[in-house]
Each structure stands twice: as structure tokens, then as C-alpha cells.
Amino acid sequence: MSTKPLYIDVHVLQTVPPNNMNRDDTGSPKTARFGDATRSRVSSQAWKKATRDVLASLLDEDDIGQRTKYAVDLIAREIRAIAPDIEDEQAHELASDALGATGVKVNKDKDKGYVTGYLLFISPRQAQKLASLAVDAFGRGVAVEKKEARAVLDIKSHPVLNAIDIALFGRMVADAPDLNVDASVQVAHAIGVGRAEPEFDYFTAMDDRAPEDNAGAGMIGTVEFTSETLYRYATIDVMHLAENLGSVPAARRAIETFLRAFVLSMPTGKQNSFANRTLPGGVVVQLRDTQPVSLVTAFETPVAAVGGKSQTAMACEALVGQEGLMDKAFGVKPFETHVVCAVPGAECLAGLATGGEAESLDDLVAGVGARAADYLAESGFVGEE
Image 1 (tube, rainbow, N blue to C red):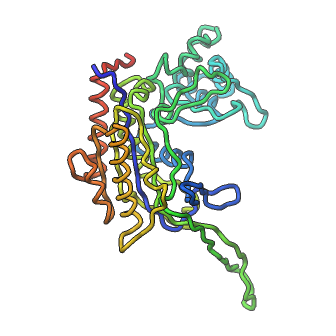
Image 2 (image 1 turned 120 degrees about the vertical axis):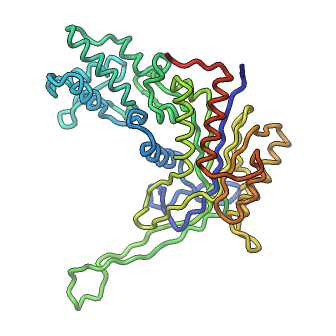
Image 3 (image 1 turned 135 degrees about the vertical axis):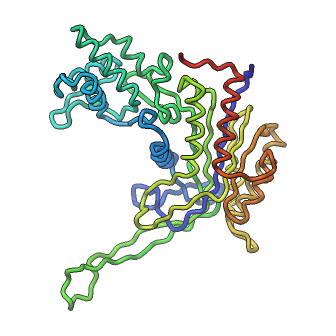
């Protein structure tokens, strides 16, 4: 039986052409100071949202939660599905009572209907279970029991009701902190490996209906943009993820889907203006039983293209060098590493791979998922029956 933890570190190097995929309150691309240089930055929130969007396309509806103020509507819909004879207005009243019994405060707005005071992250299975409790209590002429209702949202009681994205990214319930879900995945802000050099695009738009003798533009403006090679990092606590979901198969499915979604995702800000969709040039996934380790310090000194080598190639070399120094200095060497190389110059990453060779994303995902499942089995993890 294994008592060691298992962390899955995901390192991604990705070059993006002119873009403004994550902007600040002034409309400028987000930046950060790192290593005495200004870097391009994409917030972790933006990339988690992009990852959730890809997750939704890869998983069944029951595995994806909804973050909404209108959770009562979701529960009411399930009530109508169970008991079609219950009118819509009454279904919403029952749904409000059931959700309120969990400790989540529900307000009735004359324009918006039943709403919570904040976004509540709730899974389809949790909405279905609360609807079932509401219909059963209504049939018996009693109120939904608070203990039963709270257990629906309490992952310690029923983790199998949780959605994969809630298990991954966590949930905060302001009214009932005991219903919070601690995230099993941490996602860093993506930062540029080199110095940020923002530029401005001056544009005009013509009025299609303007008189022929009008030589002026119908609109004039500017938009700020950057281009960069980004270092992206995320880490998964495998045991914690399994505890959040209550079963080994669900945890393996979550790991494999998250890896694919995180690697392939990209925030969608200003996509219509820049069409900046790219795929990573290099991906390194490391399994550790010591602690998670970001390799961002490889880029504390800004990396630039040198001697005919691309910025991505130089970044890959810096990443390999930093990983070796970390291992030697702190004894945190990963026990298994998988690598994907997708651009010229990224081949040096293959030296980190356990087998000494790069592989496809499909093979990487399957290999890491299988190893995580083996670890959970060896640890003696017992999920909810």
C-alpha cells in the first residue's frame, strides 16, 4: 500500500502570434513583472475558463457543472422531469425550498425570479438529487430535511454526485463554508518567456452607405496587442481529486480529460480580430511523489531567439536545464516523465522523457491516466459505493 502523494505537473510552451486574448480594464493585454522584465500574462482564471469550455466538449453533460445564480431553475427543471404534473411556478417554489435547505440563501427577485446572491457551482447530479428530495417531500406533505439536503452538496457525504470540473477547480459557498470544495488542480498565470513588447494596430472602417464624395472613414480606432511564447503550468493532486469524485474510474477520466483540455485550450478574447489559435510547441508532464514543482524560474532571465534558434527552441533548452538543476539541488526528481515535441527545436525535451523519446498527446494522456489509476489502487483508495 502506497502512502506517498502523487502530483502531476504539466508544463507547456506555446507560441502565440499577435493577440489580445486576456485584457485588463483599459483594454490592454495583461502583463506582469518577472525577473526585472515586463512579461505578457494570461490570468489563471482565463485559462481555467478556456479549459472548462474544452472539458464540456469532451465529457457527458452529467460530468460538467454549471456556475450560476439560477440554480433554482436547474432544480425546478429536474422536478418537472420527475413529476410533470407539478406546475412550473410550484416547481420553482419547491426547488427554492430544497436549495435553501442546504444552507444556500435564495432570494426572489420580481424580474429575475429565484436567484442566489452569488454564482453557485452545482453539478447536474446534485440538481437531480435535490429535485428528487423535493418531490418526495412534497408527496409526503413535509419540508425537505436539511440534513439530507446538505449531504447532497457535501462531497464528504456524496462525492460521486460531484461534477468533474467542480472536483478539479473547487467551489466556494459563501453562506455555507462546509459545502466548499477544495480544488485538486492549481493553475498558474501563463507568462511570456521573453520581454513583452506591446504594439498598437491602427484601424479604420468604411461606411458602406456613405456618399461617393465622402473620402473619410466611418470609424477610426486602435487596438493593443502582443505576441509571445508562453510558459503555462498546472498541477494535479491525484489523491485529492479521487476524494473529490469518490471513485478511481472517475478520477482517471478527470485526469485524462483535464490533460487534453488544458493542453489544447486557449482563451477566446479578441479571437475574431486576431485568429491567434495555436497549439503548444512542447509539453512536459511529470509525475512526482515529493511535491509539485513549477519550472518558471527557467525564464527569470528573459529568453530570446539567438543564433538562428527560435525563442521556443531556446525556451525548451532553458526548461531542460532548470529541471536538471532542481532535481540535483533538492532531490525532487520526478519518477516518470512524458513529453510531446511539436515544433523544430523542441526535440531536446525528449531527453526528459522516462523512455528517452517524445510521444503523441494521445499516448501521453493514456499513459499518465493509467499510472494515476495504478497509484490509487496501490494506495488502497476506497471510493463511495
